[in-house]
Length: 219
View 1 (tube, rainbow, N blue to C red):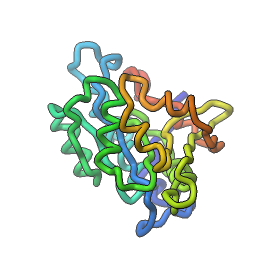
View 2 (cartoon, one colour):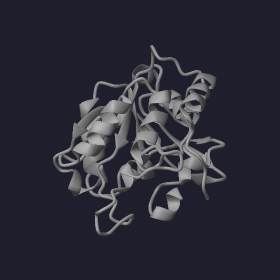
View 3 (cartoon, rainbow, N blue to C red):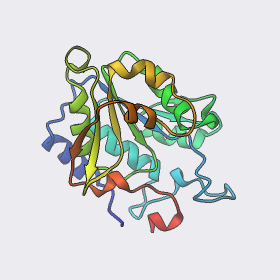
View 4 (tube, rainbow, N blue to C red):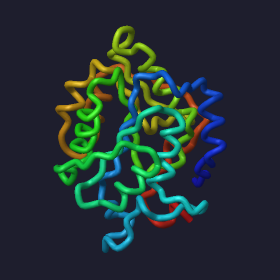
């Protein structure tokens, strides 16, 4: 299944249609961009996050741009040795942090990003190899745990659902801060999702299920 990453104009329009405002919001985006993408190219010569999509935009930049169309603040987490990705994400408008123990697994990067923005009322956790998620989807997830989440619904978790299948990104309210910071391994936040109620939002967005895993995914 192939879908097209939204253009800049489409991203802005979708975010506006979803009621996103640039001045408010207490949910911070955390974009995980610290993986090595070994399944894409086992030799390591082609890093998947920097590969160009059909529209010419690098995978990670497209993911960041869509997220920035929905959220005022996005923290991108990269490896300390990945200056190329860091520079591109910073130029796109993200705050970029290097996670010293990124190779310990996805959970380490997630915890680094949340720690950097721990004052937020909630966090939307997204993967940099999923450039086809629509901004309107991210806006809806953020709203499900944000807009006063710290006072009204701190225990909320929101995940998108497309044709009965749950995908990414996933939003967490502030009450989950200790659990997010305590994560370890390469399973991300699956343990939190397994042990807590999840508000599943049905969306018309196949991008929540499509990641860039092999070269054929971007052709």
